[in-house]
Image (cartoon, rainbow, N blue to C red; front, side, top):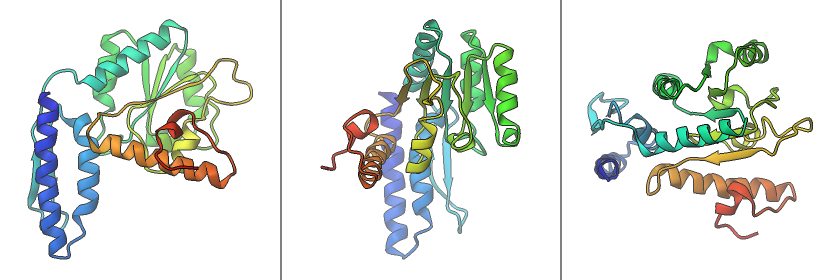
Length: 235
């Protein structure tokens, strides 16, 4: 409830600032509006300040909230459940550069004695070797941005995939969600999507479901399973 209240107030402030900017013919806040509302729930532990890209004035402030957030609890819960079934887990996040949330997630997992590693931008060149080396040393969970593994990688060791944050590209979403769903895979592959209801995250998931349906329909594949089931578009 506290989180919902802070988010609603932050969203209203951002909307008002965006309306005023659009009336002046200023479209530069659109990107900040979208990304701030998508990432605030994950970064609420340290708060968020949105700066206008041109005037450098503060547009809106999302206050911090301490404690373990619901999505973080759910993430740990799913990971523990999957590891109990001897299933390693691949976790996708979007905030992995200047707004990196991986240190917080990693420290929470390590407190639960979960062996976790983060694949970063600099690791792209020898990804397969790096991941295999970590696996040999007992890694159970791999955190990465989906763009780092969307092509050229078979991650058969991770039959459970969690989109902690959802990408905005249908191509990235489709490729990343099938990293371990390959012909040699012997286990059923599970894909989880985590969002906060009533936020921009859920609206994005709905949009991605619609885009996924259109993408599949163009290829002649009509489906009502998985994320596509959330689409409201008719076939």
